[in-house]
Amino acid sequence: MTVTRGTEPTNGHRPAAAPSAAWLMDRVDALALLRQEVYLGPEPEATERQHRRGKLTARERIERLCDPGSFNELEMLRRHQGSGFGLEKRRPHTDGVVTGWGTVDGRKVFLYAHDFRIFGGSLGEAHAQKIHKVMDLAESVGAPLVGLNDGAGARIQEGVAALAGYGGIFRRNVRASGVIPQISVMLGPCAGGASYSPALTDFVFMVRGISYMFLTGPDVIQEVTGEQISQEGLGGADVHSSTSGLATFVYDDEESCFEGICALLSLLPPNNREEPQSHPSDDPRDRRCDALTDIVPAEPNKPYDMHAVITEIVDDGEFLELHADWARNVVCVLARMDGRTVGIVANQPAVLAGVLDIEASEKAARFVRTCDAFNIPLVTLVDVPGFLPGVDQEKGGIIRHGAKLLYAYCEATVPRIQVILRKAYGGAYIVMDSRSIGADLSFAWPTNEIAVMGAEGAANVIHRRRLAEAADPDALRSTLVTEYRERLMHPYYSAERGLIDDVIDPRDTRSVICAGLEMLRSKRESLPVRKHGNQPL
Image: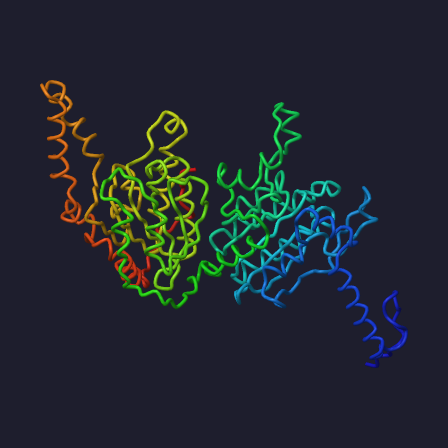
């Protein structure tokens, strides 16, 4: 068959004659100019407006987060195909979102970043499809997904197509949950249905002064309810970090926020099939923690800061705390011990005496499930007087919410070590990863008191009639309290019954935990075959 060249129709793109090397280079040069134009974005005034708001542009953010020269952009030349309502006159490349992959400290990550300079970062059909693609790639490759959010919500001019785009994002968020780490970084407004995607991800970062999240904005609330409130007061970073619990981390500026993202990624595995990368540590695993005997008072009701205990036992005293300002009566941190990532759940005696309440139960349950999903061993430091009593707690569903933490621990298959520092009373003892619900190893300090309740309360309940009839009830109560404590709450009572593995010297806490984690590294445990459990919600 003979092929004749130079007779094909040009259709505005091909030359009538055979393409030459010069023609090809002209095309390459034109492409380079187009890419440069797209990279610079819209007019300089739009960039200046973004900077005046105290915000970086989408590409500036990606450059700050990724290793230099590592970002590979996808679909840079994508444009929307919509028409009407003025869209046909504005068809900018990227459609307001930059997507691709790069590395952060050498680790592969997939990213998307809203470009607020284009359509206010609003989501249309093409915009959504770009995000869908990068989400699918992240899941299939097995790498973390980071979303840099700075958008005005659904693009009104595209109607239901924009809403369907959000639906596709939500579905992918759920499908990737527990498969790859998903990180939402809020660097601008996020209103309406758009806020559901961050809520579905594993970690939410916010920056004070520029981040806002709410379903209905201040104007709508004022119109419907008459309440007046600012964007900051309704859905700012501090609101979501201390009141709603939606924000995992909060920072004062974008630069420190990006540093926090890097720190978090360094502690996580790329996906649920791998373990977090270990880091050789100069901190000896058998280091004695002499300061612990001074940090933790012997008196069971005297407060202290659990952060000081964690600082003493982890590698180099460094840890990353999640939800630091929400439900502060429980502490959840990621740290390293013997060079390997661990998740630590600890009661905080400095806040509400370390009791468990509705919010603390939810916070700890979420953290336990996150660690279990990503193969991070759990260490639980226990000093808990029980669940918080009160009408509001009972009516608010403390039973249901407390059961979330119980469910999370019972379902966890990662290595689990419990250390009881002082007291562990009632149902809270069980819920804080006791041996009875599956802790692999349980240790206690010589100051431990494990019981249904404190000795004073127990004596009052058991001997109510005797105390009522006694001539000197205070003296009798003191005797009965001492008797109960000596018989049922002495440090070795639980060890004698096999409910703890050993009573340890507090100064050996680090070395005991490190030895246990090393032994448990090869632990393999599977759950019954099922579609999924039905945890309390």
